[in-house]
Image (cartoon, rainbow, N blue to C red):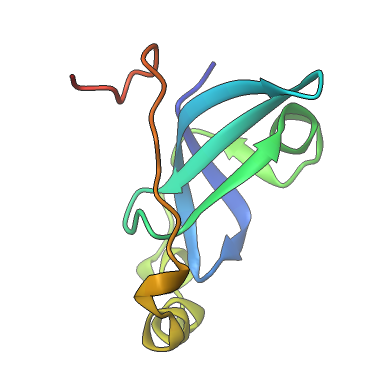
Length: 99
């Protein structure tokens, strides 16, 4: 599975993500995606959403800065409180597990 992905729409103002974990939840394959620029911006999505929705492109697409880091990101960072941040746990078989 490709590790680097570009969202067709911004997610909290960012578009470049890495797939850090793959798990099975309730019979569905779920992926944990984390922003390349800010680990506070992360999301869980299903295989269907990542592969078949048309919302994601494999790899990091070369975009102008204004399209890859938007004003939405600045607003998100200025309004985000630290207590709302979830911890990220990397599976032992993840390529991002460095232990």
